[in-house]
Image (cartoon, rainbow, N blue to C red; front, side, top):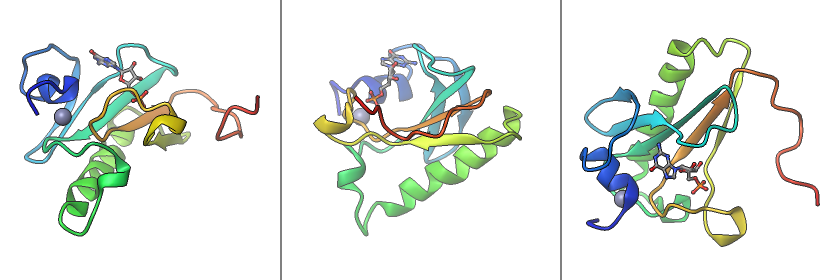
Length: 116
Ligand code: 5GP
Ligand code: ZN
């Protein structure tokens, strides 16, 4: 996708702090970290959101999760971490390229969503 921010990051058009890369997956530090460790894991192939995962591309989502486990290990997140994939307007998704946030490095609290 020519005008997709994360496609541009994947192809190097926009710089990023890469933490992991393989044939299917690219991972980089979030520009506005919300925890001591905040990394975005994305499939190299453009998928707009979690709502667009299907039988044909689900292996790419799985590759992202395999990468996330490796990254959590390499980042020393032995105390645990959280994976979030915002999807669609109600979730607050701002970049329409599937991405898994990895958040960790401190206790993250028990709530999954804002309560107000
Ligand atoms: P969303 O809100 O769609 O779930 O997450 C998008 C994330 O992308 C946000 O956490 C935001 O900080 C991050 N982000 C937006 N633009 C850039 C950028 O140019 N570089 C990096 N590294 N992260 C970005
Ligand atoms: Zn894209």
